[in-house]
Amino acid sequence: MAVGRLRVEAVDIVRGIAMILMALDHTRDFLGATDISPTDLAKTTVPLFFTRWITHFCAPIFFLLTGTSAYLSRRGRSTGQLSRYLLTRGLWLMFLDVTWFHFSLQFNFEYHVILLNVLWALGWAMVVLAALIHLPLPAIATVGVLLIAGHNLLDPIRAANPLWSILHVQNFILSTPEYAILVAYPLIPWVGVTAAGYSLGVIYDWPTERRRPFLLWSGLLVTGAFVVIRAANVYGDPTPWAPQHTGGFTAVSFLNTTKYPPSLLFLLMTIGPALVLLRLVDGRTAPWLSPVATIGKVPMFYFLLHIPLIHLVAVMVCYALYGNAHWMFETPSIRQYPVAFPPGWGLSLPAVYLFWFCIVLALYPLCRWFAAVKRRSGSPWLSYV
Image 1 (cartoon, rainbow, N blue to C red):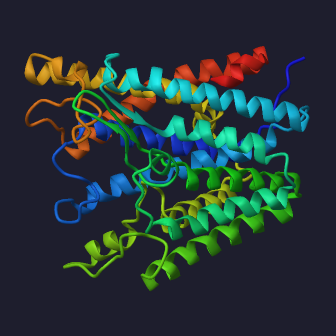
Image 2 (image 1 turned 45 degrees about the vertical axis):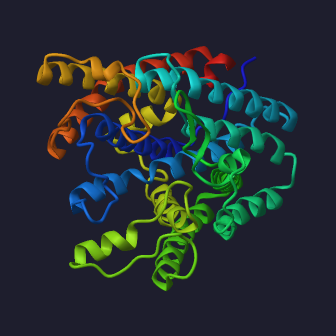
């Protein structure tokens, strides 16, 4: 008999929102201007910065709710069965990161430039969680909070050891004229977020009148902690904020926290509002939320499809503008990632938003179909996609 996990509509909705926003970030990566970093205060614009900033919520929500979903999937499983599932799924995600995800980004199998990316980190987070779930829940929560709150204490350590790059510092673990491997998502803080998410899952065993105030007030508390600690400019992010030439850019500086690896302030800034959002959609059944929840029910299926679709759109746009699209199949450099863009490449921000909307619209029917397949089948193998 297939083992199913408890579905919580609010979790699916918030995860669906994160997946939709993630497509905006990747659409901008492929179709937007490549000569301006959205977080470079010397060059960015306020609209470009906030286009990037809103997508900062995606990874923390995805890791947090991966932990929460693991807790919810305990139904019908022993601790040992859940541990084995997390271990095997984590290994599967790491494999997908260096195979399907790599191919989707580059449309080649040259492997000259490899980023160990989000699926790599998510896979490791699940592998570590497979061990942690044997501990009491308060211990798991403590591990999560300590990793989130304390990992910036390790910032002064500048070790060339590849293991340190995997754990804490975004850096190369291999760099030669022929090959480069960059750890884009160092593990320590992301493991902490996943462990905290697993601990959060217990609130869905609580009655509604206890769960909803907890989500609201904990979300406001975490968000308030971000504001207070960021204003102090003492701890929590390697890059302090500073007053700028306009109020808008001062706000940009205040919100411009570090994602690689995610600083304490980055995580407070994103997880706090995510908890409030979980409260706002708790028990909501508005028709317009149904498509969002559908995407949130099949996040990995959506993830595995959206990158090659965006890349394919970029190929077609490139061919339409340049009469050729060979750049879109060539191995990029780290500075020009995910593809080797042609000279002068980059659509306007409104055009990026338009393509993003069309891409999500195209993915929704596929997600609805696959969600129905999973619901009818109940096959445990489908839980790996």
